Length: 247
Image (cartoon, rainbow, N blue to C red; front, side):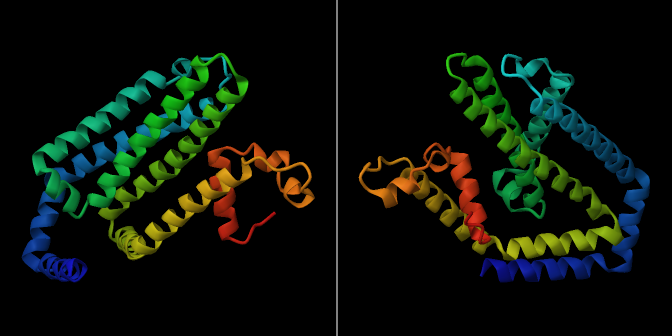
């Protein structure tokens, strides 16, 4: 199957790279110019990480009547995010969509697009929370969604830093092992995600149904904490139930 062929390919590639001549070529290229490109890319991404930290911390303290594009560092952060998206599109154009999705860096490419998508969704909900003046509940719901997605983006951005650890022998092997384990869990995590979304939607519909006043048992289940739960709160509750938290 495809997984067995991939293992054989990785083994052959590792044996090829262990040849003394290949090692000398790699070291020569690294000493010539690759270390400079690597350093520039590392510094650029570190600046991107710092900007995201500064902007996201301001988002958490943002008032509802304050537009999100007025926070410090917003313009530079958006411009740098657009540069990341253009760089990925250019890489996809040069390699072709098939090779772009199938090469050894497909995990990092997918992680990069996930980060950019999370940032875009965060801005989308922050703008909706600011522009809709009519209802506080609606604004609050949009803000909750924005902060939830922003927290996910924060995790992904920090995980993306592990990409640069691949360049060093002491940390590169550890990173490869961790991601190899994650890829082995891909099927399990996919099924878990389906069940998470399925039960979240089921609980959301169940808690928002109308309970008869005469039924004390079902009326007890229709308390204010569950009847007014949003989609993201229901999903979080379902995720906590996976670990045995039924409180």
